[in-house]
Length: 120
Image (tube, rainbow, N blue to C red; front, side, top):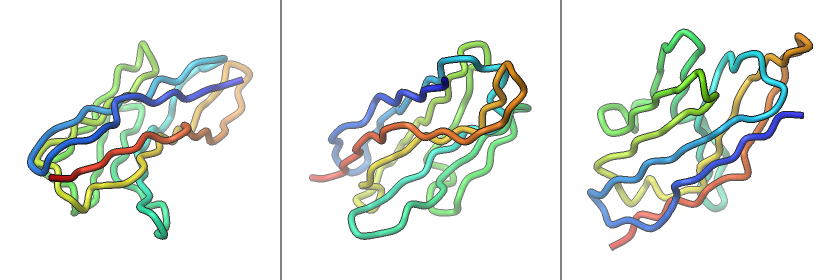
C-alpha cells in the first residue's frame, strides 16, 4: 500500500511564498514521476510541474520562474517552492506520483490535496 501525504498549504498575500511537501510512504521501490496538479473551484485539475526520477523538471508557462520543484529521492519526498504568488495561483494543490512498488508494479497515486489561497 502506498500513501501520499501533503503539507504546507495556507493563506498568503500576493507576492508571498509557500512551500508544499509531498511524502510518499509504503512498499516503494522508486517514484518514477512526481507531479503537482492544481484545481480551482469549478475548473478542471491541471498539471503544474513534474519531476522525474532522474531529476528532470518541467513547468507550465504560468509558473515558470516562480515555482521550483525539488525531490529527495531517499525520502521519496517532493517539494514545491512557490514564490511571487499571484491571486490566480489560488487552488487546491494535489500531489500525484507514478510509483514503482517493490513487487514491480507501477501505479498512480494521489494525495488528499492542500489548499493554497492567495489573497490580500
